[in-house]
Length: 215
Ligand SMILES: [Zn+2]
Image 1 (cartoon, helix red, strand yellow):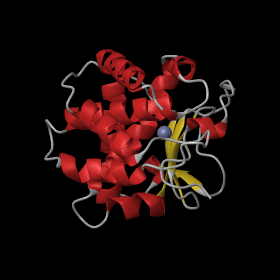
Image 2: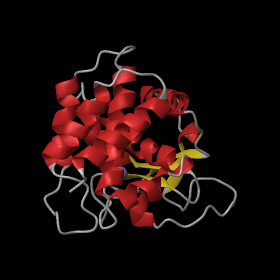
Image 3: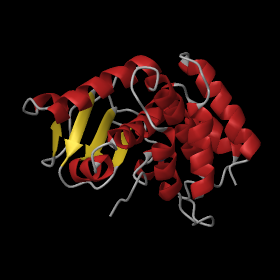
Image 4: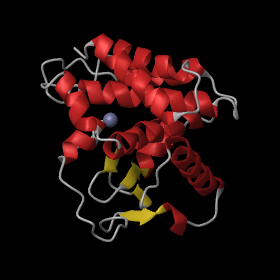
């Protein structure tokens, strides 16, 4: 079973885009646009719109998944997939909606990395780990949330706490995403980087993870 942020791009393989009709896959997924009107739906649609604007790209679909417990970017379909139960767990209790949005931003960062050919480059920084890619995504998510913080009231410590808990101690595992402190710091560093230019943000993020050596 996939867990928190583990269902990231590398877990899906870096296969080339097929050009197939983009849509939400499988019987357990449905497009956010097809949901009944609700505050929940509104938050998701607004978040998608803002994230696409910030990172300057578009998903072919934003899908909710009834079976998935986690979130991931589907590199083949160019879709963002978020498990409903996972999203609600992260967003609760009330006041934690920005945690859930930060998770979405992390996955959106993988779409950005894909668009700009950063996946190979970041892997080359350390050929044995996905950690550079993940910490860079944490940094980008932080940059987005910092930008978002100009429009909404966001409590940084509430989100960094989550990134800390999302860390894993499996440093010998190829799927290692980063220790709690490393994820906490990468996100916070991005959050404190004041820019609304995604390319500048990304370059600073690459410099950050390179300096952190990702190991
Ligand atoms: Zn990731």
